[in-house]
Image (cartoon, rainbow, N blue to C red; front, side, top):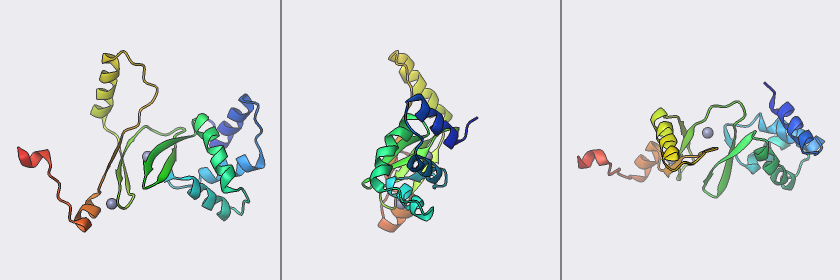
Length: 155
Ligand SMILES: [Zn+2]
Ligand SMILES: [Zn+2]
């Protein structure tokens, strides 16, 4: 098992790209970030590490990190594009609150199985899937006084 740094170094070498000091600092920042983060969060972490890498360099480096399968674009929420580390991580899906930005992660065997069945039905070879449900978390529903008209009530 490689570390994020080793994996990134290896990926760049394979592509004949240099493991520059900027790229090294960016990958060092990424492993320190919270679960879900955007380009601005990477930039803020770099500032904390007293790195001078620019936000433009962060934006230019993100596609490399995605290609190297170290991070994935998880979801778009409130004008933000969020990423998360996926190397050596277990697959999961997300519920996103569009009011406060809270992200709930979940893994459901039946949902996974159902997706496999759908692919089989269409003879589709899946390489990845991302399930994101947007809405309001419990706290925001209470705050905004939103009532859920769930199917349960209709029964
Ligand atoms: Zn919320
Ligand atoms: Zn996640």
